Every structure is written in structure tokens, then in C-alpha cells.
Length: 124
Image 1 (cartoon, helix red, strand yellow):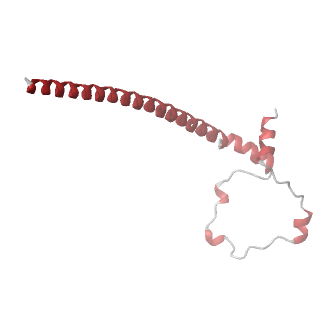
Image 2 (cartoon, rainbow, N blue to C red):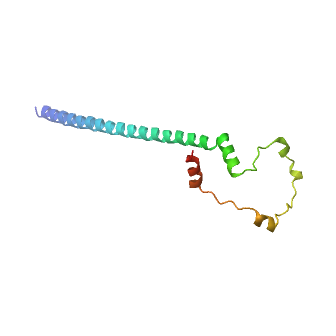
Image 3 (spheres, helix red, strand yellow):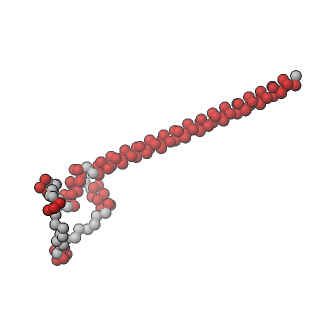
């Protein structure tokens, strides 16, 4: 009889431990699911930000926009043609330096900041 009570007690104790382990596993799974959802949201937000940055970059480097700014800030700009391409042997090694009088008489352009460009861009 005593051995039966020991086995009942041992069985009941192991059943309690098993129930505890099942509940512990259940809460761990719920925690991991919340972490997974949080990580997925963060990943989606990051991917959305990357896509927005790609769109902004494409807009910034669009040829039409660059040509407009080149004409506006560098009026002497002209697109390259094949006649502009020369062999490296045709480039002089000691290029002449600009004359001090001509450089001082040339109008000086003010340095543009990013704010200046963005303000001009927003004007109609």
C-alpha cells in the first residue's frame, strides 16, 4: 500500500511539473509571437523608408532636373558631344594658370547652400 501512495504522489508531482512546463511554453510562444510581430513592423517600416529614399534619389538625379539646374547655375553648360572627347596625349601637362587680373574682374558667384536650393525649388 505504501508503494502505491508513493507512486500516486510521484505521478501527481510529475503531472504538476508537466502542467507548469506547458503553461511556461505557452507564455514563451506568446512572447515570441509578439516579438515577431514587432520585428515585422520594424522591417516593413525600414523597407518603406528605403523605398522613399530610392524615390527621392531618383528624383534628385533625374536628367531633366539636372539640366534645369545646370542651365540656371552654370549658363555656359552644354551637353557633351563626341568632339569634346580627346586622347590623353593631347592634354598639356603644364596647364596655363589664369591671369590674376581676369580672375579678380570676373563676377564672383555666391556659395549656394542646401536651404537656398530647396527654397528656390519650392517657388513656382
